[in-house]
Length: 417
Image (cartoon, rainbow, N blue to C red; front, side):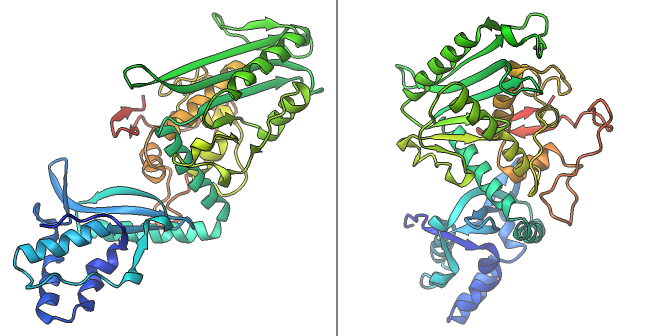
């Protein structure tokens, strides 16, 4: 049997319900209809079949296009294999022709593709209808399209262990924002070891400005690791940090909960120029284009908005975001979701941990449904998470969100508990 390659994708509906209409040979038409029938397609030896957890199903893909629309797809390799398989099984005398070329989507027109398996044609049809409702909602919320595309791009960058990621937080006196009480950062990058393995390297710091404690006292927990510094030393340490960051050969991603404010601190207060800084989500690189370097600023709150289907103003309450993602004040995932301690050091770790858990827990839509199955209204937008109201202390009235298994980038289930 010939080897087939992937050149693009076809709509599942085009293959299942319309492909046979394009065939001129009536016998081929009947045979194709039979092989794509409800009963035949779930057979374990069917060319479009897949087996998951011991159950037979239909192998398909959810493709997200550059305009944000999502569709159920079969790959061109699957369709080619179907043609060769039917001929090899002597169901057709000759190879049946490919579907019309204008029915195929080239890989370049698709932003991301996620494989999926359906246990029945009914499940595939239900998902197709769900995607239709989601597409309509996205048309009405164009900003959400940009956020969702950025989410998947950042997930791909993190999964490829690309670049240096530096989360930063600045705390200042509310009356005078130039009076910084403390600054924190948390950095992660990947280094190739001698054996070819890629090792994660982390570093961080929490600097407390002694002279400004009279204006705003930094909250410090027992056993907290921090360094008390002068204003001059703070400036020197930040300039030294960015001098090291500039030596990184790949792209640099600055994580912030207030991008415009933090950039002002870096440029104006600490004289760190940040040349060619990219601030727009659509300017984020891909893993293949990231080799050119560059500095990009990213707000995890934007990714959280994408994950929760928010196409309006971003919720910048970092403590609330972390509770909902189950990230604690030490920047650890899956632990104390209701930790309330806050300073620049804990906030920097939280920013990095929030990004890590969102980018390491699977594709956006599947991750959302796994994290908050009870808060996504079915039959409506299909993407918007409606959280319960919070009490005066910031505690969700319905308690912590359920501890659900979420698949990381390696496909391994991790318990959210």
